[in-house]
Length: 140
Image (cartoon, rainbow, N blue to C red; front, top):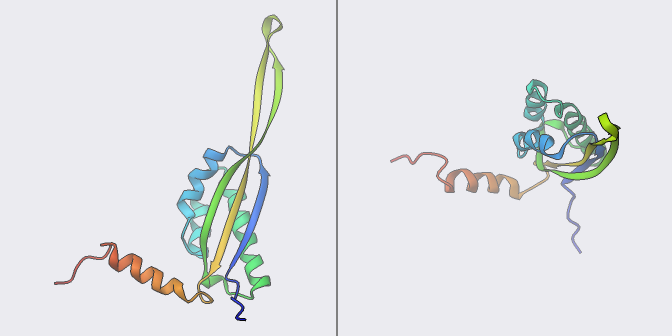
């Protein structure tokens, strides 16, 4: 029986005090990019969601280096998703005996990192994606 070598490692952040929509705005920018490029993008973006996402990306890279002994130059963000977490509800007293609901939303962020040096079909996937999708102009 052949054992397939594991090429993906993940980091999971749960109950992060952010709105899921605000975290998705940042996650959509880093999905599919390399590790170094992702860190540069996250450092330069002006959103509050960048810091916890950068911590998760760094944690996923450390997990990959300790579990698979992979180099940071070979890492690619293969999957990144944001799910809604629990919502804490508080009531603030207002005028005339009324109350006002305050909702604190949380989210769960999952970052999956893939080592492209261990994956054989990654190079073929990039070649097929770029040259067969019309992304590169035709040389005639």
